[in-house]
Image (tube, rainbow, N blue to C red; front, side, top):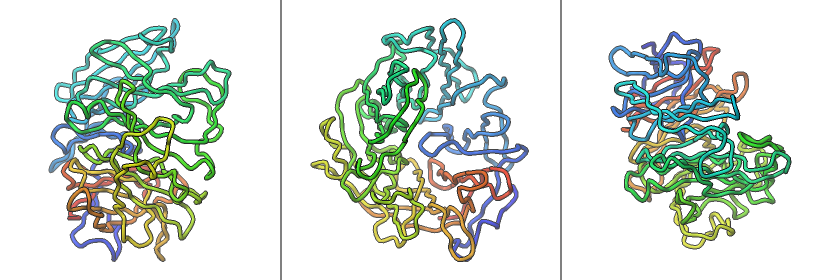
Length: 416
């Protein structure tokens, strides 16, 4: 693997190595940080490429394998938290439309059909062809996704959270609200039975959408103004009960950025917070974007008090870090090791999204940050974000960059 010192500078740790693990593709890119991508061995992983989704097998010699041998259009692939399976859907618009869900075993590479619906989703009056799951439960038995519930004419119509139960072969709408646009749905990764039913949902208060039945709505405004208090995040059971709030934002001082994730395999979550009056969305010099962890707490569905929710517990993980400008984040399985990028920062020599490694003694301690490198992504040109991720054991970090002129991902080792 070719080494890339172009990302490093005098602040980078000694012994750090940056390599490009795969080559031969016009472009490659990592899967978004809130979506799992690693297989059972904790080293091989799924990535995106100009030749379709691929599996990369790390070793002395890196191997790649196409995830699919055909080139059928597929909306997205979902890797299970345990790395055993990949779930994917195939949509047909013929004869009223249909959706078929498959599961691929990542050891045998054999696929099996788990679910099919034509016309309407069973248990609802919603179009089957508009169902696009975003996340799989930790027991691999349920999938969830968001869907517009409007009549195709009404503005700001509600968006429903749809859960498919594979044992029952039925779907149900477990929650609905017009602020559920772009909900970043994520099942909890904790392995115990009760936690496997928990869904984290983002709400963007103050959004506006145009009428459009099924699928992604036409968005007039994705993020509300500061007077709307900013977005917040909630946790519900996937039968629609046990509504909880996460203690972030909605206090007039801070606002949810929308990059929240579960904190590894725990029942805590973590996010990046904007200053509420920062209408630059993190761009303005002198603003701070803090990393904050929190635990879900029982709350009223109508309250939306965020940080002010009674009984809320949280930890500012970036406490004491000067000039915090963090943007995206990802954790190892323990939730005590982090990969983070920043908004584009000019350090006097180069501009770009900087990459940090963070670690904590326990869930209550702030992170110790180690600067690693500058990805040199500036949101211009290829509009590529670094989107760093960690391997489950926290020993390998991966990030995107367009430093070569085309988007590619790179691997970092030797940073601990």
